[in-house]
Length: 296
Length: 296
Image 1 (cartoon, chains in turn green, purple):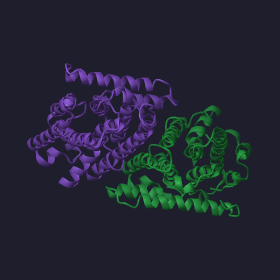
Image 2: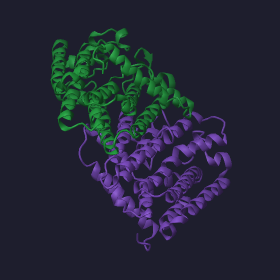
Image 3: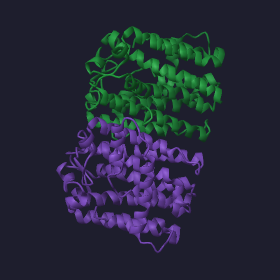
Image 4: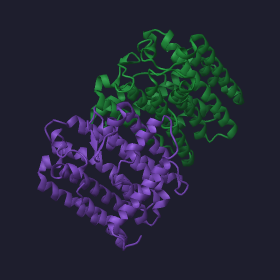
């Protein structure tokens, strides 16, 4: 870990490693070709790769070399990508644009988009289950955690609550449920997985858990704020789309200023949580500050 | 294994054990309640539970007690159920009826049906990853095999090919690809998983592989034939629906009589494959014969 590198370079390098791994992994043709294309289209449509980067950072902050868990970090990105494809479907959020590009079903049709999502989710577990450098028991524990956070005790539950809450009277409990599950759970898991795969001790795991939870919540609050204050160009999708869908968001519930303060509170909590790692916590801290200040 | 029991009792007992496990597993409320309900609706809509039964039978034929791998056997049924929910969606096969009941999206809407499928698929891997009675390395290998067979090297690939081949000129290569992947891959894996979880030796695994592959192919040929010759009441869905959708099927390609002979050939191959197990192969043989003669 070269402490002289700045965050932009650090994130860029990690992102490049993750993308190179994904590109290599999906190089072999898969039949039918259109399914393969459809998965690659969304996998390679850009994005910050923040979940794998968090996983790699956690593993390295604990003392490991990120290269050793690249399949596991990349698998989280497959799950994130599947969730975007399914969320964008006409029956769900009905979004035509994502990161400035047409969404998967706009290009490949609804059936192929559903299957591309199903394929990515299933393949993520295959990718995750293979790694000679990690003890089988740790891999299993990680799969258990990942499937909870991506499914019924996280993302899928959050998205379901989001869908059924559209247009309903906003209440704080539901808003928190949605955000805690839909976005924060997988971000938190991304951080914790790095620790689990390293077989980190309880003190380190507690530190990672606090950090992951706090940045997960901050991430979604910032997302909500950007939907109100960002430009369509910055966001790569129509500005104000949450409001148009009458989604429960932090700015709608608390106003923009209070929401900003709430995000800041979480980031402060995140910074506090990783004090245990001393100077090694540098990248965790830089990432937390970046997540607060990002514009897309 | 009581050799005096007849097959109907055997299948009924195993099915009851699998269903009791699934009911117990999903007893705890999951939020939102509608997601929970939607998953349970399809999970408990009936069905032969043939995949878990095959997995349990393989494990017991190798020498184990099926109770020890109940979570793993049941997890396969979660994956099968998710695939039915997604296959029935309007954007996919657009089926309103399954096992004589309205399909998931007809009751819960498309968004919730997509999420119920996503939730079941993800939870299946969580369920599968937990078992103190099986060595972690064997569980990992099984997860690897299951995710291949359920995803890009099996079911998802087969369903994708099925969707894009609708209405196209039928050819034997595509027909075989669809059947080998869409249905046979998960059936074959169900049998092999029992052996992997038992840590069976190579000779036993070869025997299970041959059996699983053969009954997998026979199963789909019989399904195709029943769609032509069965009644809507027996099938629990409209008779002739494959033909109406211009699906590639064995009867459409080879005619009913030749298809019946092909199914019989596979069943003979299956019976041959399990000779290695001697008298212990009884249930495998009975199941193979039953799969050939079933009427739904």
